[in-house]
Length: 85
Image (cartoon, rainbow, N blue to C red; front, side, top):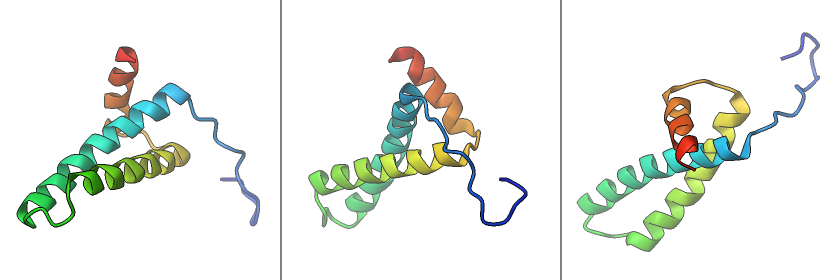
């Protein structure tokens, strides 16, 4: 952040491979969570809805993670996925 009030930071440049890897990490995390919830809710939403929602949530989560420039374990896992990609 800059020292002046009202000024925005410069746009963050996101590496495409890293963003894709982060999206995969968050996607897999949310898939597990949603499918467990759906299993105990007796399949109310269905697998297609679960997978669609988790894809959208995973991409949004990866975007905000990359925008915040935070370094977490998700970045370490994403770096390993980048090597595979």
